[in-house]
Image (cartoon, rainbow, N blue to C red; front, side, top):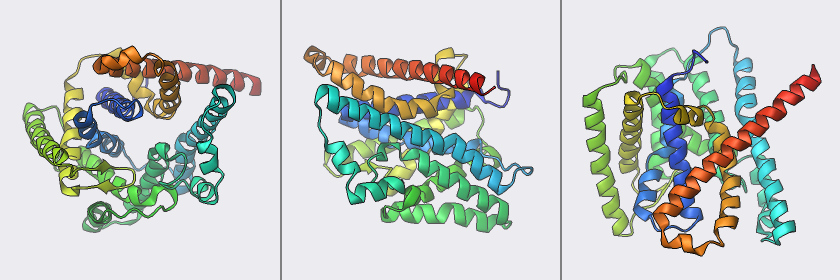
Length: 339
C-alpha cells in the first residue's frame, strides 16, 4: 500500500470521475436529465483541480527540468496514448460498422491538424482537454511557488488572471488549453490553501453543513436560470453564463464532496476507482462509444432512463478497469522483455 496516498482524496477523485462519466452519458446517450447534467457540470472538473492543488507540493530536491519531465511522463504520454486508441476505435467503426467519416475529415483538415498538434480546445481530441490543461497549470504553479517569494504577489498571480479569464469568458484556442489553465491555477491554489492556509480543511460537521447549504442554494438559483433558458456551463472552453455563480457552486460543491469523503469508511471499490482516475478518464470515451453502439439497439432501455444511466455507468467503469488491467499486464510483459 502506498503510504503517500490519502484515502479520502482517492474517494473524492472516484466520486469526481463517476460524475464525469454520468455527465457525459447524459449528453452522449441523449437522456433527459438536464438539471442533473447542469448541476454535475457546475462542479465536477473544478473538483479535480482542487484535489490536485490539495496534494500539490514543491520538492526542493527536484529541479524544474525534472519536474516537467515527470509531469510529461505522467500526463502527456497517457494523453497521446488515449488519442491513438480513440483514433483506432474510429478506424474500426468506419471499417467494420461503416460509420461516419466526419472524425477523420475534421482531423485531417488544416485547422484540425494545427489544433490537434497544439492541443487546443478546438482539437478533435478536445474531450481530453483536462490532461494538457492540468499539465501546463501545474507547471506554471510550480514556477510561481519557486520564484515568487512575496506571498501577496503569489496570491495575485494565482487568483487574478484566472478570475479575469473566467468572468470575461476569454476563450482563445491557445496551445495546451492555456486560457482554461489560467482558471485551473486558481482552483489549484484554492485546493492548496485548503491544506496549507488559514482555511485548513478538516473533517468537520460545521463545514459539511455550510458547504451543503451554499451548494444547494446556489444550485437552486442555477436551476431557476436554466428554466428561464439562460444558463450555459462549459468549463473546458469557458462558456459560462454566470461566472460568479459558477465559482460559488464549484468551490462549495467540491468542498462538500471532500468533506463527505472524509466521513466515509473503507470502500474498496471507490479506492480502486480513485487510484485509476487518469486512465478511467481517458478510456471511458472509448467504452462510452462501445456502449452506445450496443445499447443503441436496445430501445426498450430508453423507457427506463434512470436504469439506463445507472447500468451504462457501471458497465463503463467496469470496462475501463478491465482495460487498465490489460494495460498493466502489457506493461509488465514489456518490462520483462527489456530485462
